[in-house]
Length: 452
Image 1 (tube, rainbow, N blue to C red):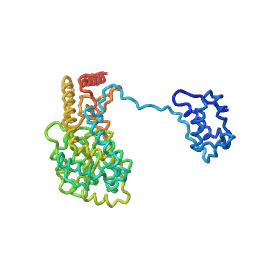
Image 2: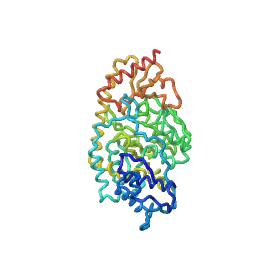
Image 3: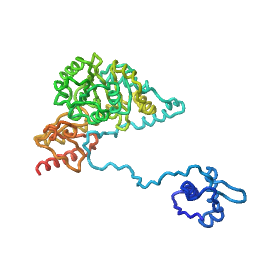
Image 4: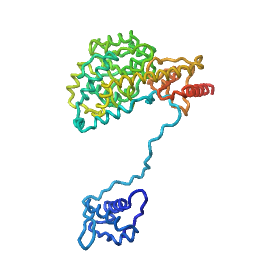
């Protein structure tokens, strides 16, 4: 006789069906074995006859059992008796964000984001007349989105390109990997300190790279290695020092690229957020010899989890891209591309950037105000753009264990003494009303660490 332990979580007939099905799949009930009659099982389990009948009928409909008129129900011959192993690991819910300030460079602000428009465009994308979005799209991305990106880059960053030069991908890392496939024999140079995921990609792809020094004017062009072919830079707001590449260095860098068959990868990751004067023109817009590969992302201008980035290839590299035998498939769902396209077409994309820029400027002003009492001990740099600034102390720092914060030394391969004295203060995730208190607590902890 079948014996099971029932709960109040679901209907009894569903539980009985699952119990018997599991016994059949696991081999506890073997093929052609007779099941108890509905009346006997009803009495044994103290369940209604209707509950037993519904469960048996579902098993019958799905082919787990068969019936013989006037005889009863039997276990069907199941060719495969494999069943999924029991999950013995506790199903943990995602950890909630701890209610403590984070000064991490990647944290950002979303409170004013127009979610209602994204919902509207998402609904449009899944309407029946949009069935074409279910098919595979163009490997470079939706043409309409590339058109919007081209227009936006031209008006906001001075980037000159055709729609055909733009490729959309899931991240700058993925698109940077594409560059390594287009130029498989190239030797690379990267800023030091610099963006760690670029070094990670190069290591994963087994590519040679050399670190290049960065100072207050950005990458030191005189330190570039003559044997390398490509340099990756963040000229608008150097990651992580916040330095802006000077006009003199920009000219020197373009001349360096023109001397041989070299390329510059301009990573414009947070160029929209500049708080002093007009946004600087992209290096790509100054390039007249097709030497700059422009790269950016929607992670800052929309939100991080959108996972959409884009790259603008110079014409010579576009030809090499088309010659690739194994091009990567499009990694961004067409529905997401449609939503972003509509967001940009409506003008709300740029309005959202303007709102967000004002929100970050307000945060920055509050941060600078909160740092005034400590100005005798620190120097502040990199605050003219982005979502972080750098605070330089007169002594090496020890990071407090209970605060999420980074030092410049965390992003450097060749660690200089000064890097251990430089704190990266990301303010994007701070709450407006608690900035002063958060900054004061952080500074006091750092000063205490120094004294001990």
